Image (cartoon, rainbow, N blue to C red; front, side):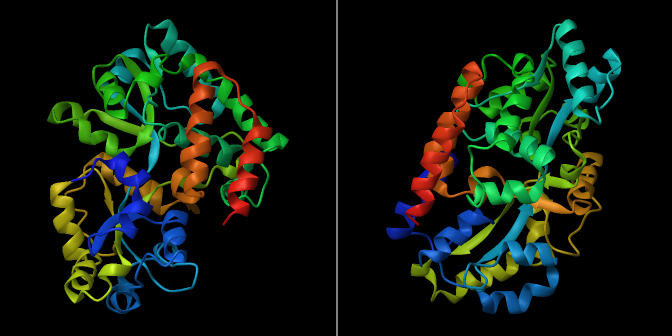
Length: 349
C-alpha cells in the first residue's frame, strides 16, 4: 500500500516503472493526460460488457483524448459543507442558501465560540475544493473548466473576484489550517469544536462512532451568482489498466466486475462513505446522508472532478498548492504570476 498523496504525486514515475496491471485512479484530465502520454491501455472491450450500466456523464468522464475508453468508474462523492445536526439544533442554526447567509452564519458561530469553518491544508489539495466552488458559483461551470484547461487566463478580474470573495471567509476558517490534515479537521468537527467543514463525503470515514456518524448532515455550497448554482464537485474514482498490463485478461475481467452492480455492491460493503456509479447498485442500505449525497449528484447539471484532476498535474501540484497555501496564510495572491506559470506549463504539453 502506497500513501495516497505519495501515489498521486509520483504516478508518472510509477507508470513508467513496474506498475500493477490495474490500479485505482481518477476520471477527468488526470486520466486523459496519462492516456495521451501512452501510459495506459484502452479498455473498449470491457465497456462493451458494462456500457449499459453507466450514464452518459460517466461514459464521457471515462473517455480518453483519442475517443477510446480507459476508465471504469467505481464510486464518486460530493463535496459540500458537513456539520453535526445536534450542535446546529442546540444553537438554532439553519443551512445557508446564499453566500451572504453563509457569512452571517459564520459570524454567529464565531460569537458562539466555535471555529465557523473547519479547514485543513497541510497536504495542499483540500483548499482546492473551496477555490473550485467559489469559481463555479461566481463564474459558472464552463468558465471553471476552461480555466483549468488554460483556455481562460488567470490574470483577469473573474479570477481576482474569486479570491476577493474567499478573503471574506478567511477570518472564519481554522487559523491552524496549514498544520492540519483533513483527518485532524474531521476530529475537530466530530468534537463539536467547529461549526461546519467543506470536504468530500469521505469525511465520514473518520467517524467510527455510530451515534456521531448518524449525527452528520450536509448542505451544498451556497449560491453566489445564479449561473453557477447547478454545478457539484463530485470526483469519480475507479480503475485504469496500465500499458504494461494491457495483455492481462484477468485484469480486464476484474475491471468488468467492478463495473457491475455486484462489484460495486461488494465495494460498498467495505466502504459506505461513497456513492456507487452503476445503475442498479443496491441503495437499500443507504443512510439518510448517503441518499442526500446521491440525490445531490443525480440532480446536478454539471459535475466537476476537483482542481487536481481537472487541471494539468504540474499546474495543480507545483503552482496551485503553494499559491493556495500562501493565500490561506496571509490572504495574498498574485494572479499574474499564476498566469505566467500556467502559460509556460501548458505550452510545454
